[in-house]
Length: 632
Image (cartoon, rainbow, N blue to C red; front, side, top):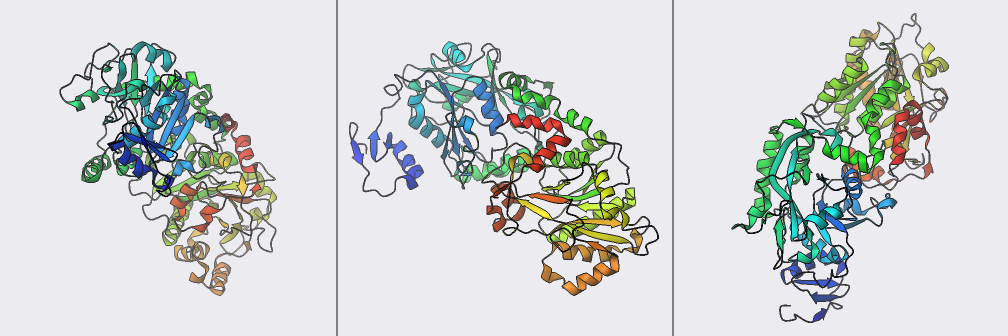
């Protein structure tokens, strides 16, 4: 290879190049070579000849893993300030973004390119590949991570800024680090809104480079690039930064300049999100260095070693609202929803018991919906070891006059035995504390649907369930089963930051997917003590465990002993509950597997029958959710 400075070598006999592209590129970069279609071509030390006619545009190259929760906001923001294209190097082993993410975003088809780039410590290789493969299409390239936001203070667009400040070759911009804001976990709001607290300016810089100036053999740091002769890395005051004795010093500028531009680094986000970040490890390290660094920083994150804010700085959020007005509705979204939720329900009316695990991305929509539907109280048992949902529960309770109650119940939420134990404890707690008489047992991906009535109270007056337990009845309870209608993945592979009821609009045919029905219990006032927890647990075992764990005869004896009458869903011979269903959302394939395990076949079902009723109901009960229709 070193002997062919002006030539090329045919690869037509080398097998399938595409399948080995990443390995081949690593080898060729070492020799200053690249390949196009079926040939290896020797390249010059810079891209001067290739970029002579490049359009005056700026692009961003970044490497991502599990960033689908944040990418839409990040791309919308930087499109709004003038970047023209985004090259996403997907570092996941399964090429998460390559299977449908871009297909569902037609507005980005000409603005985003995704490459599969798995492996540990691949960040620098990704930057080299991006410059080599796409450098000729742009005048400038930035290396920004998906948790970094460029804020311009004197320019409305990045191109005029770069024309003014990047002529020497590369412009370096100081970080401003945002705090975790004492937030425990993710919530479905823009990152730039969630974390207004700032730690302040940091000496670390991120650099945007003229493509002409790039030394393709020298990109060795995520914070700066090595340049060819006669080009320099400067700050916004024109100070030259690449004359440092040690190359690594170019990643810092202790002058801490922020008057022209800053890169806001949402370094931690919430505590739980920070732990997830540290679990991945740094993308610019490999081998033992990667593993050792990961171990130390993960332990630090788990111990809660986070930096608190010393001031408020909302500049990225204000900029996002200015460049992309559809985000403005988040300013009043929560308050608008609460104004629609009637908080004056009978405290002792219908309640929901739920076991939650890693559901923070969905719990707001789910709770909003069921409170608006008329349930008086929602009991959520948090199965995490760290009690992540404690803060959310306290904030919800302060807004909702005790209509949301979160309790800590650590354990394995995927274990059916544990689930039964949690639900029995929930029923006991709810009945003792508030003396509810009707309980619906739901998961966070279950939505109770009433096609003929607007509220639970109306539904109770039109169904026989309200009359089946008169005070004189000697038996204590009624169990009802409500059919689950399964909504498939819709071909979506990963999370999208949209309501679940909007994302998934296709039902799986009942012949293809059948889940156990949801359970509703009606327990007569004053009679709960007559139904022992042991009996209730056995009854729920039959509901949630495989049928062979409890014989049909025994289950029927249990039902006759505990409940005088049993109402089934329309899937059985009874038609009592044709006016109530439960929509069960599998969510995307990746989310579904996280819920059910990698071997769950149901996670591959897309759904074939369009059904928008759930999303229509969400907008009917909570009109503020209609704002999400502006997000495509």
